[in-house]
Length: 422
Image (cartoon, rainbow, N blue to C red; front, side):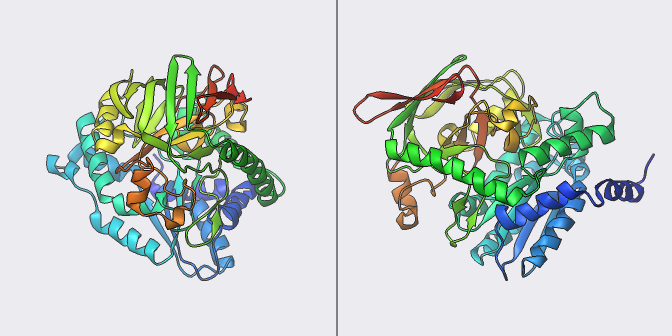
């Protein structure tokens, strides 16, 4: 048996002098969060991702960061709670921590999240406890989520090839081979494997901007998704604006919130969604894998919901609040995206959502409105924006999906055909 100290040394050696890992770190600081001189940076990451976090700190300080503060999570500590905590523990979350994070964002601290956790971590735990813990965390983190979805500050999400995650994606490979294979997939999807990833992202952002400009010019009142068991009409919020790739935060800094990202997205009308939607990829939510989701919307709200796996957790999610049954985001991703063409199921929303068109339950992005900086929370709701303690993306796109844009006069324009831009 390898002790923790020896295991850490082996991990550090594996990633020592890894050029692509360093490029990902540099890209994340300069293009992802686009850190400015003197700005502080808050990083959250699994403890396994320490080699990446150290490179992030290196590049952050080279860019003139004020203070870089890492917050690490440990899957074993998480499991100890589910195995040994008293029942009342699952109705509580660390409110003081989220209050501190909200205070940091109010002081213009940038936010960088590193994901890489085991997607199946909580699959064997009591679904009721998982649902209660998720609900408690959603309530406690509402102030943080509000600042992120409002784009108060520059923020970004990147990935680390966690071992348990890697074994889920590549179950037939050895531990080291699986982790290196996942790392290669992450680097490729993030464009960190290229000679100049930063220049590549400049070009990629231009291409995404072409899509958003076209959609904003059309100003559809709704989108209809149909094919593969889905027939869903998503009304779009009044004065909605399509976004994708680089976005300007309210503090004036242009950042890339997701690395990788292949989507263009906007805000649906919370009261104007009708029909049936089926998931085309599993949803990994808070350590539980949820598969074969099928929901029915009426007047914007989910009235029926099933899943072949993880249904109890999904239903608990829907019961978080009224807004959890309504949409806060709709996003378009062609089936030809690099992540889709990799043929991999990542079991991670950051990647899988960039392989397919998707919708998100819960809180809307208030940034996705024209003149959003002048709109109050009440203005956002009046225009159709949703309010919730959660924001959870899941995939409904595939090569079978067609999408029509519906104009104000009822006429339609082809947007997607067989999973591709029309």
